[in-house]
Each structure stands twice: as structure tokens, then as C-alpha cells.
Amino acid sequence: MITDLEIYDIFRIAYSDMFGDREEDDFLFDEVIDYAHEVLESGSIDVMLDLIERLIYMTHPVQAWTGEIYHSIGKIELKDKQILMEAAIKRLAR
Image 1 (tube, one colour):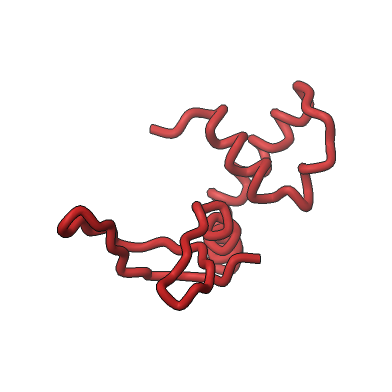
Image 2 (spheres, helix red, strand yellow):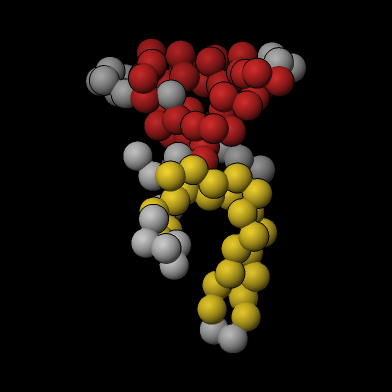
């Protein structure tokens, strides 16, 4: 189960355009948590897709064999001491 502190960190980083420049205090924590609940309980596919897009850019960037650097989410497979990924979603790093 994800804790409120983890939810706070995820949403503060994912929505840095809303919360990133603010100094951390108790009011910010409550505001971020309230916003997270609003997003998660919205039931709106557009809101959820926006959240997923933001979360993709929070993943560790990896360099493809082409040299391009991507953020991606997908299925991980360990094979012959290599880590392979079948990317469900990938975006060029920005």
C-alpha cells in the first residue's frame, strides 16, 4: 500500500508545474494530498491519462541501442544477465 508521504512525493513531483516552486510546509502537504485524492477519485479518463503521462517522465531514462534516450513503462524480463523491456509506453526524454 502506498503511504500518504509517497503519494505526496509522487504528486508534488508529477505536478511540479503546480507545486514545484512552493516552499514545503504543512499547508502544501495537505493541498497536494487533497489534489491527489481529487485526481484519483475523479473517474475521468483524461485526468488519469494526464497522470500516466506525467508518471512516465518520472521513470529512470534509458538509452536505446539507437542512442536515443527514453522514459518507458512496460514488462521487464531478465535474460542472460540482461534486462529487457517490452515497452507499453515510451517517450523521448526531454
